[in-house]
Length: 489
Image 1 (spheres, one colour):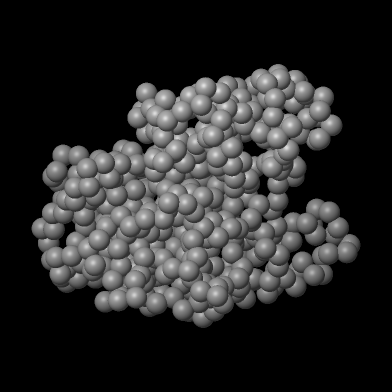
Image 2 (image 1 turned 135 degrees about the horizontal axis):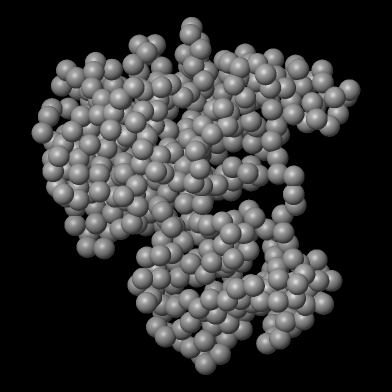
């Protein structure tokens, strides 16, 4: 039977390592079949780089069957964004610097700007000197003001277009008491607003990551951490095995697998009330790796064992309607919905090769097509798929021919299933997308130990989120900005 009880249940059994492709620490793009060559060589310096490019492509084809190497990069520079020291009024003076520090770090972590912050307090002023900021090279300027104190404080943010010397956007954000655990999240909401004002794309600061954490006694409970690595805290306390968390689209519920009853069953936790609910299990088997449909009404999960295994659905909104999506002697696991809810990506060992592959099928069941770079006789190992909330991309981890170490990969369905490699060192598993569809969190193993890491799929920039723990199967929440706005209103 296929399980990873000790490390989690999103992927098939013990990985052991990941493949490594030579090159720089920036995303590589792998193109199907043998058409691709090194793009930089083909387009910029054909005379100088053609031979090295061909050699590198040949090396990659040995590691990734049916693909060859190409490099993609953004052909534009990042905008320079300056942050004028925040000011306080009517009691907000003591909170202004704290709010500024949170917003500044969020904007750096967005990987969309070159950020100028930590400026002298003499830069704090009521009026904006556009000529000064232009001389400093800023394209945008963020100003902030905190009015009031305690539960009545308001953070006022403005985004200035330095080039056109005008205020582009302005917003007000309610701040709870500085001692409240939600103070930082309220500031994150403001950060995401700045990202959207400047780029027209969503941010991810106002979000959290759930994961299973292995303790010294072998038990695993669910934990939460904010997107910036702060507020690490325990979510469940079963002192058994709680695995494979999955966020509902409303950010108020988490589904997961737990062994609290002695058998692996799917539960739903209401984060507002703390109430836990077991999902009905009308047929025998192990209930694993739940995921929500985009409307939050349906859970899809794996049921393995009992003679026939597969993916099944249950309508949690109506509390009814247990139904089979796939069923057979093979084991399907780790489902994930496309953003429009029409397709599901999942793992399966249905090829009988002993190594899992990734498949896509209609959300209601039906013919499944292989997504991972499978070539007959060279099966590889690809597992833990998750569909991006933005765009037609699937992230997963994999290695070739059950050897080497795992790395994080992306299949771009809308671009002829082009494959992009995001990680290149250590062992890396179980990616989960941020709500911006640009960043991923994953479990990494380095020479110094284990931790959670975040990588930007555009620039390849990587940072450590949490270190010194044994995390498994992270799940990134949707944006909590609408929820915070609802509560503030």
